Length: 491
Ligand code: BG6
Figure 1 (cartoon, protein in one colour):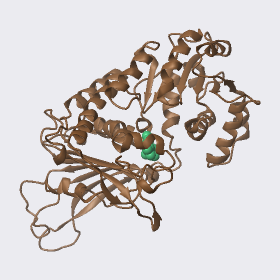
Figure 2 (spheres, protein in one colour; figure 1 turned 180 degrees about the horizontal axis):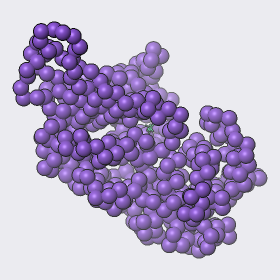
Figure 3 (spheres, protein in one colour; figure 1 turned 180 degrees about the vertical axis):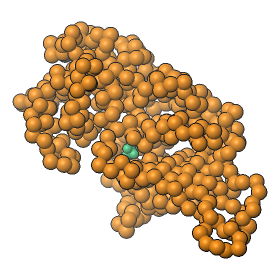
Figure 4 (tube, protein in one colour; figure 1 turned 135 degrees about the vertical axis):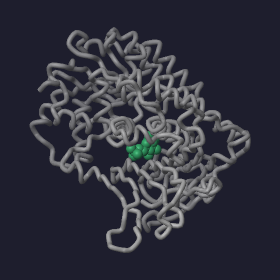
């Protein structure tokens, strides 16, 4: 009940409330927050969309959303409370005058206004301007937006400028849903709460790092968006680079937003640029061809429904990233992400260096080095491969590799694994900023990505085909083989 005293209730306005994100995710997460007693009693949810109101359209959408996606039985008492929070407003978001309606439904004194932009980015500017004229905003109000924040540095600046015209830095919540994931947040705990890792986390002990975010799904009807963007803009610019910053940053002074942002920006600034000179050695792009996923035939990317048959968009990308600073000099980070890979699987591998001398030659000609695997999803957990004596009274000590395995589902049995959006919505409503991305982070990430995109364009690089259900083009294997290494594909 402590929460009720501490946090101000909100008027949560969802622009695009009948769209895909809201009706698939946001409404479900809000119900879960209500069920967990994390919504203040007086918090209201106002759905805004362009469809004519026939009764409370938001309520209908929430009902359908829970019918489709709620895994357990609906709690009718919670539903009653939740329903009472909801109302709907029909608005043409391009018409500034229409925003005046908002001033009539929000309560500036009693509640903090949170504006969730669940609409395509071309509407962001119009909504900001409309809100500015609406008379509904206060210095406490916030806006929440999600990727794509631009297509490159220039377009992201345009969006950020339009937002900055109306909202100050603290009022803006830029979401990367990976930062709401339990296992991504656990990286902070793992790194900065364990002396074991604090002292063994640099070029002295680590050989290289792999970050894999593999998806089994294809384009899932999002052709129009995805083909313009490709896997690099869709996944690497945001999710993979965010994971990388958590792994590579210096220990922040505290968990405060400013300290975390500061350390992450330093890492992004230290990424060695991919240029025309090194792009061929450091990157591989792929596009899936027809193949099989778990035994079922699936079409190639350009054979999907509504496909652009000439498309040059990549559905797979692998990059060797070098970080030019004291901690990481000489330690490559290998990043890869792709659609239609063998399984949904996200994992970070920290490969430690081999020992300089081996006294266990009876067991291994070369002692295998320790390996820390951090499984982000689905089977969340952490394991370390260590060498251990084989029990017995042999004359000589023999060792073998074993795993110390911490599976989250085993260790935290019965805990509700919070959806990333539940956490991020709550953070926005409570006025916190740590889990959101700063403008400078986004712009640094784009600067690095733009250089790589530019190099691909100038060298006329085209994605190489790979059969759906495999780990990408052969060249991705070669990328590591050239350095005498290999991808961890054992899932
Ligand atoms: C989104 C991308 O940001 O993340 C999608 O636009 C991708 O293409 C999705 O499928 C993956 O998210 P998750 O949480 O399922 O790993």
